[in-house]
Length: 332
Image (cartoon, rainbow, N blue to C red; front, side):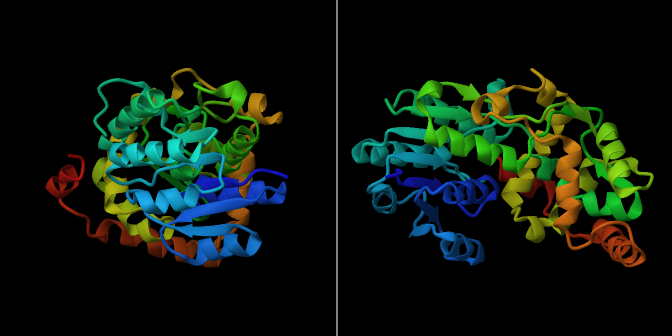
């Protein structure tokens, strides 16, 4: 029989995609979620078992780990990671967990980071390395969704790709590729214990090069519009509900964007991780863009889509955002 897998933060991007892939491949999956929301119920209908719990509750963790041997540990974008990782390590050790795939972050490979979440991830690496658990560490950069997904509607319908990333480049990975890597690692983790793996796309792209790909797919000219920090914040908060971002996540993105402009995400360039772990090539950016548009509510350029996007675009500068002092307080 195939072993029971536990997926934490299973209603997030990589958690839900990994759960669906494992279920398709016949693995029993238990999902660790904070609420039985629509996404959790969808995964339950596909065959997943729901375990309700909080990352900071030892009893919840212990119950969720019962009968499990392999875990994908993805911590939500919130404070408290090192403290909660300590609880997980204790519960995992008692449960006899054989393998953990841990979602980290590329920026945690660099010293003197300003993001509290990045520093929490660095601290969590140290805890896991000293724990005695068998761990594989994923260190992805900016996801494709976070790089372009939020503003793609404006690019497709209005021809305006608003970007806070300057001239920085990034070999953006798709969620689907990351899920494929996670699923493969859960099925065969031993060759990768102790390693840090960075799934990427096949090519590093600047925002200008991304705009050219969007223009090709949409069949229209697309101009890059540089976004200063104040405009990024207004755009992020205006789309926060749609894309599931809260104020803390947005406060951390400020620092990620600065690192993007400094070209940190292009350090090391594309990797062979997706191919090496899954046996298939990573998706290129055009494939990702086409899927985004096909699954969107706006679709390809149209008069109706233009008016809808223009209305949203004009509302962005009017969006209320927390003060800089308030945002800075979230990073302490």
